[in-house]
Structures are given as structure tokens and as C-alpha cells.
Image (cartoon, rainbow, N blue to C red; front, side, top):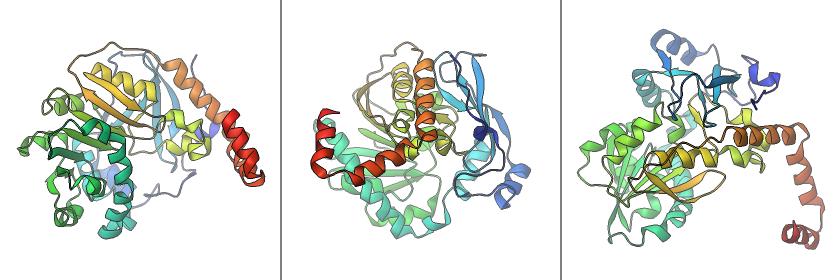
Length: 331
């Protein structure tokens, strides 16, 4: 059954999140003059299976999202072309607060151990100095915990962070997946942390990536999963996830099926999403998760509407510790 979202998903110019680039501001004027849009096709390849679910993003920008009835993937209907994307990520994407390179690296480095712990059980079979590529990695801080065990490469369009990364022993390459051919080493592990949702053609990008992968190589993907909204992320608010730099919106099952169709098996994944995939070269079939995705969003909207997140927080503060432990143990 098709999902119908409330009116708040269609109020252009009404921001529910502090705008990075305000509607009508400098970037808005620039992109209207210089950027071009083109249609975004669904990754499942089925055409004319979409319907509109939302027309704004969280900052009030006019931004049309559609859901595919053949696979359950949610995506932008139209998006910037390759030239516009390269310009946006080179010159506009990073927040002004991220201009402090050292603090930005430190914030990324705080998450590095968590990523390494997530993958290290499956990197133990790699040779002593295995090779890690972090694509779209900003200042390279996610690689901080890997530097002693691996040769690390940072790939990004924004070169303002490269000097910091290089000072930490991380090699750098400007660009994206198409520029990996300039790196002689072949990766054992590729990190795509909050990157995949920004690609306009995930299929092509991952196929380009597989041309550099050996069988058995690992790809770590982290992005905002729809499933975790039901668990309280963003206080159950799907509109808070809708952000104009994000082209695609994945549930856990939808992402796993996309990667399976591209020749990867899922080693481990969570609802957030944090997922590790192994390249096998064996491609699977399309599976339709449309109804389950719609159910996840409906449940999240219901919880948001009735302030379930706030209610749970109050209970967690008010209840004595033994009772909280009892509830956790027995559900």
C-alpha cells in the first residue's frame, strides 16, 4: 500500500532543522544560475513504478522524493548533474564550523575505533599491512585507528583537509570512485561512511568500485537507516532525515538487496545502518521491500506524533535503576 505523509512534508520554505544554506540565500542564488538537474533512475531498473511521497527537505528546500513500488527504495526524483555535484562538494558542502581542520579530524577520529572494531574480526585474514580506502572521508579521521595496521588512502573532493591527513601518514587522492585508478594499491577494505546516500547513480559507482576489488575484499557502509527511526533516532522523525545532499534513503533490507544485486554478500548489518559487505562477484535478484519500508515510516510517524521518544526519556529518568533493568531484561 502506498504511503501518504502529512502536510508537514510539503511545506516549502518551512525549516525544521537549522539551515546550512538558507532558501533564498547565497548558495540558492548560485545554484539556480549554475547548476543543472537530471532525472534519477531507481537502482532496481524498473521504470514508471514511482509515486511522490514528499516535496520538501528538512531545511525547507523544494525537494521531491519518490518511493519505488517495485523495490522499496526512496530517492530524489531529479538531482544535480555530475558537474554541479563536483562543484557543490568542492566548494559548498562543508559547514563553516568544519573549517577548523584539527577539530574536524578529532571528531572523526572519535568514531574511528568504533568502525575498526566493527570490521576487524573480518580483516584478520588480510596480510599484515592491508590497504584501506576511505572514499569521501573529509579529513581522514575515520582512518585514525587503522594507521598502524594498514596503508591508508583518503579520497575526497575537498582538498582543504588533505594537508592534515598527510601529516598523519595518510595518502590522499582528490576526487571520487572514478579517480581510484590513480592509486596503484588495490584495496582490501573500502570505507563509505555517510557517502553512498550522496551518489546519484549507486549502481554505476559500485560497479566502478568493483573493477578495483579482488574477490573477498570488504566494503564498510554507514548511513542513516530508515529502520532506526522506529527505535528513536531523530525522535522518530523521517522528515529530519530528508536532506537535499542525500539522493537515496535506505532501509536495512533495501540496502542489503541493492548490494546483493551488485555482487556482495552481507557479513553484518545493523538498523542504523552500519554494514559490512564482502565482494563475491555473484549477483542476486531484486526483492521488493516496498511494504515493509512504508510500514517503518508509518510507525515512526505515529511514534513522533504521540511523542513516544519524550515519554520514553521521561520514564528512563523517573524509574529506579532496578526497575529499568527489569524492563530491559524482560522487554
